Image (cartoon, rainbow, N blue to C red):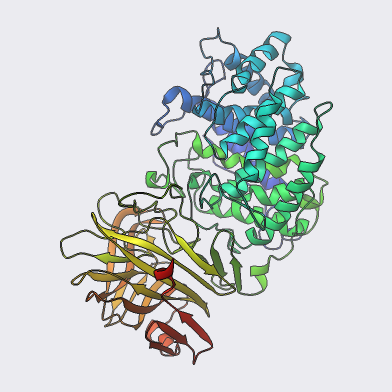
Length: 632
């Protein structure tokens, strides 16, 4: 397979990334051309190598077709089909054969809550965006087969989260071509997402506190694509909803502009991270809906930065294939529903190709994003986050006191420890959690450690508030079946550090352990420890450090092998303190940086005074009152 060849960088048009539309088209073409060897003879399936999903190989092969079809559709639509004749023929043939129930490569039928529903939505979107070049050229019988296959949505049941939108867009496509559909399904799905809107442009992906990239690449993407379909449906009423969606994506993007570094690296948090470039989708959608706080030059600056970042880190691989992982194959990044075709929802990040070459997002010079000009701190109360970032070292950190992806029903017994992609106190764009099935996690958690072996986790997050630089929450800690004990934490963003103030209940004899960021690389990170500080440094200069400011008396480094998405060797600095049974107040600082610093020296400049459950920082300029969990 030929390697990816990109055009020369264009620093006149794009002074930061060097990328123009031609780079996006070249990357899309390379991804699509590299899939040709994996197409079935009838072109309706893409059978990629790799670990099968829980839905089975037949579903996975449909997934490979449907998700790559979305990329092809955006590529075709943006140039009005010119020069895309082979793509058009390939996917038109695949659609006709896959939808034909008598063809040996017929797609799995849609059944309630089946993975096929996800892929059907991708096919519906793709058929709409390529209507003139594919749908309109299918013969009548093939169109009837497609309508019958998509008609499996009518009156059916989906999972009660972003899946409701798969039904919405699929049935809206049916409506637009005069096929049977249910307006109740469409209206009901759009009404349902209103229950999950929490304000400031943010949705939860279903009931609960489910905040991650899905908000951008699903909860904002599909309503916008639905409106495009509805506009093509005679008699459809969509204007009021479209106005609402335009207002919301504008608000959302004011926060989302802070969720990637000025080198394009997105924050590693949440599920389905193997979609990678899909992180660019909401920025493009803001431009597509003509409702964004970003200039056209900022939009392309952000999106091109994201795509270029992954290309620079070996994505796609030497075969031109998107693998199951973050940079390279790393299965712990994925979920059980992720099959070999799953990463091709990176296609969503190419939705900007729908906009024609003369659109300002392609023709205007790149503009600076906020992080290009200054360090950033952004409180996001709706998801329960504070995001802070350093301009010079391109590190973005997310302090998490709100997203947990936990079951909504209050459990009657022991709470699960939570998903490592959601339950950490902090996430970043150049560091990710250790993901081991064999040992308790250390990074970015404050845990109880029993001398008998059990270690507490962090499940449901009980919020206590978010303001400009401070966020607080508490959770219930269990040691096996013993507990619960309350662990209350307040994070204070302070000059690039996070200061963690904790009030920890627990049994006499347990240890309290506070971990910093896990950092990783291909070689063993260097580690240094002192009485109350620990530092880990990777070969490329990324430093993770923790420094005890009150109550901690020992420090150490936990090492991992093959458990981190950013490299084979990982290291996590941590602090410990003995628990004597009475509620314990602890304070430490957490740092992630590329600066060559001695953490103890910085810690000397942080004045912390503790009296009872009150923590005063820098002479009382910041005051943290712990103990609110006792009344929660």
